[in-house]
Length: 284
Image 1 (cartoon, rainbow, N blue to C red):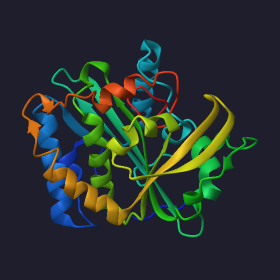
Image 2: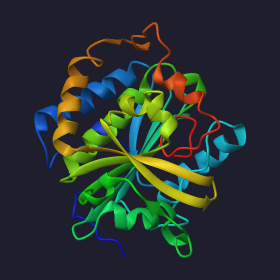
Image 3: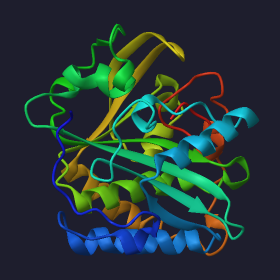
Image 4: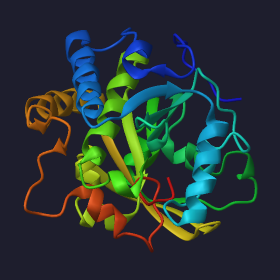
């Protein structure tokens, strides 16, 4: 059984701001980021909820897979294959005024005080199906990612809500929530190399990508991913910078101000042939 760092568990399906209890990190920054981010998406008609019922996430995912809008969630976010508890995981649902879920973000907290991502990558990805599976880790950063580690994924935005840079905001909302609840050392994500080339990984807020972790013969084929990572001190700086820049430029009710270039949400939809652990039309 995986170790779990003790933490306060909120009630399932609370509005995200109501679920926030700050036990760690800089309270003024984290509380303001969550409140301002929530205000921004509410202006778009979206309400964010903090949830533990991963069966509902998988149900939603299966329906969107049939429509061609998503890839199947990986095992680390599927309760059929791993022990997902309110103490070690969460997911955020964004619901429109009709009660439809139009965006998601999942998060897992790993407590690795005596091990590292290099040793845990296979079990993290495959969960209970890890026996007999091959995992090759060549990413140098995997050796140093240890302690309390947050892994984000299952990030999806429904096609009609893409193009508003929600892929900038929602992963940061997830990190702000996590850093308030757990004493996180590292935030990571597993991403396809093409996402870094297209600038999508940077849009999520990850400043570093280390290559590679290989999962040959996975259900998604011979998969190569990079380790997108950011230490906690850099997460705080990123949140502060985002709060003062993009959130302050939010156009009420219409999303973030569009640039003349294609937004990251739109770019993600073009990466349809390369499965990833992060992305609006992805394996995540």
